[in-house]
Length: 328
Image (cartoon, rainbow, N blue to C red):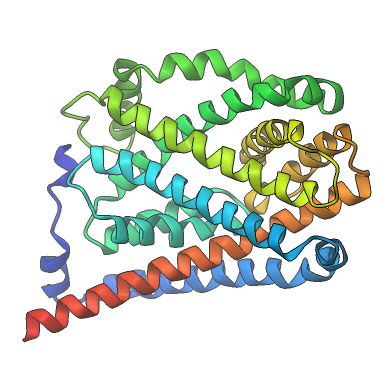
C-alpha cells in the first residue's frame, strides 16, 4: 500500500459540506459521462446500416456467441485491471472496481485516449480512492496487456509482415516489454509514475503472482476477442479451425496498434485495417472483411455499453441497499 492511500475516506468525504468547487467538479463529471455516452451512442447508430446486410447472413447463433465472446473478453480485462489496482492498496471489491473500470472505459469513444483515464480517476475519486492509484493501476495493466497482445500477435506475424508491414515496428517493443515484467523493473517504473504525480513510491515490490495473473487474464481477453472475430468470419465458411489462431493474433496486434492512434476514438480505422488484411489472407473477400471489421466495432460498442451499464446498475443497487440497511 502506498501512502497515497491516506486520503479522506469516501464516507467522511460525503459527510463534509459541499463547496462550490466540489459542486462544479461533480457536475463536470456528470457532463463528461453524458458526453462519453453520447459519443458511444452516436457510433452505435451511425454504423448500424453499414453492417446489417453482412450480419443478416451470419447465423444468429454465431452472432450471439461472438457478442458473448466480446463481453467475456471485457470481463477478463476488468479482472486484470482490478488485480493490479488491488495490489496498490486496499482491495476495492469486484462491483466497485467494475463500475470504475467499465464506466470510465467508455471515455475511449471520445477522441483522445486520455479521456478514459480521466473518467476512471474521477469515478475512483468519487468512491474515495486516490486518483494516482487508479491512474497507476490502469497504466500498469495497459503495459502488461500490450506485452500479452504482442506475444499473441506473433501467431499472425507472417500475414502481418506480408499485408501490413508498417505494423511490424510494434514487435520491437516486445523484448523491452518482457524485461519490464520483472517485479523489480515494474515496481521501479510504477514508483516513477507515482513520483511524477507527486505521490510517494510503492512501499512494496509488485509480486510475480500479481503480474502473472494480470498477464494471464490479458491473454485470455485477447483470445476471447480473437474468438469473437473467428465466429463471425467462420460463419461464412472461410477461416476454419486454422484461422482461429490467426484471428486471435490479428485481433491482439490490431487492438494494440489502435492504442497508438490516440487521437481517434478507440483507435477507429487502425484496428479495422489490420483485421481486413488478415481476413483477406484467410480467403475472406476484402469487402466482406471490412463488413466483419465494422460489425466487430459495433459489437464492441454494444458490449462496452451493456457491461458498463450493468456494472453501474449493480453498484447503485448495492449502495442503496447498504444505505437502507444502515438507516434501519
